[in-house]
Image (cartoon, rainbow, N blue to C red):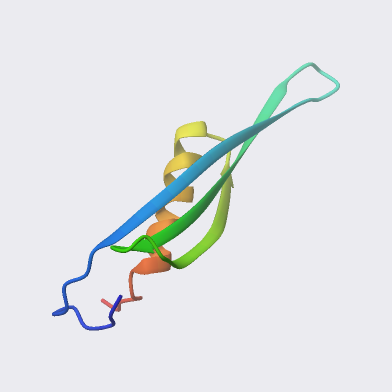
Length: 84
């Protein structure tokens, strides 16, 4: 990997995404669902050597939003912060 955008590199990124839901019920019987997503990721170079890895998480009241936001956190790990 290189900080330079002009250097080509071959990287394989493996990501495992899990989603957990928690359902709670209040005294009136109304249900509230909260989703928590976790992504574990590992980057390998072209020779198969591990060069990076980590874990990120996010939560929301929507399953699809939780999964998307959790994967967005993986992307943010590799993209430089930018300013508008």
